[in-house]
Image 1 (cartoon, rainbow, N blue to C red):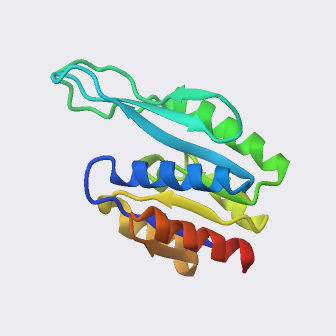
Image 2 (cartoon, helix red, strand yellow):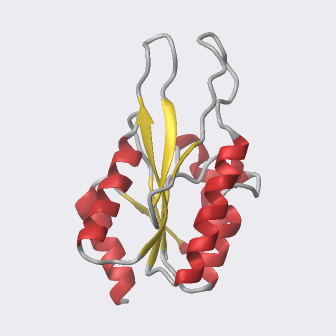
Image 3 (cartoon, rainbow, N blue to C red):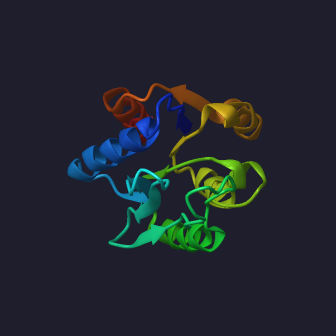
Length: 167
């Protein structure tokens, strides 16, 4: 009931979840969640990260520009919390599935989308997310026996989602 993709290359998991969300939308599946689009900028700067909220036309920027030489975390916590609020509100519309761009450091620390994931699972809504290789162990601890690793292959992930919906 909690599927996750571990992307091996930059943006692999993001592209996979975007494609799956597009295929589910075409199939008429009612979704909640957010998928990530990275906007490339000048080579000296890191990309900008936007979350597209799946229940409307909202786009939330979750990155902040810290300068070309910065080494710190670029996540904009205010942007992330805005996205979390929009996704949490979407649970009231009883979606069939929730797709979330990432289970990252914020979620490992109990923040970000973590409470929304718990709420969706409590309501019996399957959740699909991505996990960076460095966060897999922490995610597995969180997911316990609910987590199922999936390849970053949209067709395989779509089959998993459909099995959850028909399950």
